[in-house]
Image 1 (cartoon, rainbow, N blue to C red):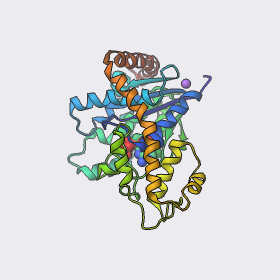
Image 2: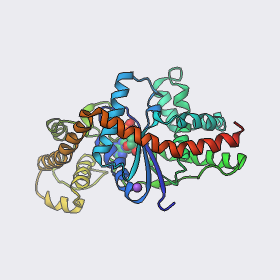
Image 3: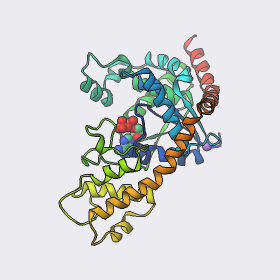
Image 4: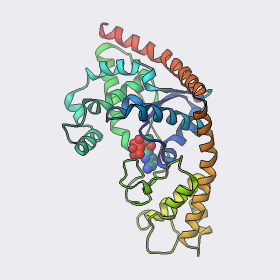
Length: 329
Ligand code: ADP
Ligand code: NA
């Protein structure tokens, strides 16, 4: 292979991706497609590990794909597809489930967190084996690298263990993937800058959705929690809210934080917030238009995704055939 193979997925569990998803992950996807053979998927099989309304899920899968295209995922440079359109994911996951220890899966901290929030009787077995499906996503494509944030490290470790275990038991079959540590920014909740911006946040006012109308996001920025001081200074410990706004400004405008600190010397938080809202609008206005364009032509979007699934299946079916052969099917 000339370029490293990269695999990454994102769940279609919201009507819009938020600024944290973009600055922490998706922006790196766009960069990585230049230097790698990237496979990106909208992981709808993962989404049903918690209850989903079918019509809502169908819409969110499409709008997620439209956002990825609008953000710059280019089908000449990367393979973009929807997970459920490539049946090999679920098929390989079954095989991997059968070499995963019950206790091993039970040690996944993300499962423990989510299950304790839902109650263990309501948490599904699918949620329990979520990281095994994630391993299948990666191993099907013989990925060399997986872009991961801190929250996904343990799952990638499991993937590596399963790949190694299968290879040792049945003979070399899977590439053992390495983590590609993403250098993305961690974006904090505007209302609670002690925790990360997340769709599971208690207040929608803390989340900037990429598809928010400019007036809506401007209001959220204006209402962002700061501190009782007046100095615009990057200090994540003492000034988490202001630092978060500087991070967002810098990431979207491309200007270094130090330069922004100088620019706001002697000026108030209101000026900073106004400018953050403006750079955000400059970014989201063409993005929203592009998403609308994809959604206005469903046949074209379907065709793009069908082609992506076909390309993905070429690779996935070869890996699955080799795996089934090893297992004795
Ligand atoms: P959420 O926390 O909203 O449920 P996900 O867990 O679905 O988001 O995350 C999707 C991707 O976006 C992951 O790669 C994750 O690391 C990244 N991400 C999510 N929230 C943030 C954030 N606040 N800052 C940086 N990256 C984030
Ligand atoms: Na590429």
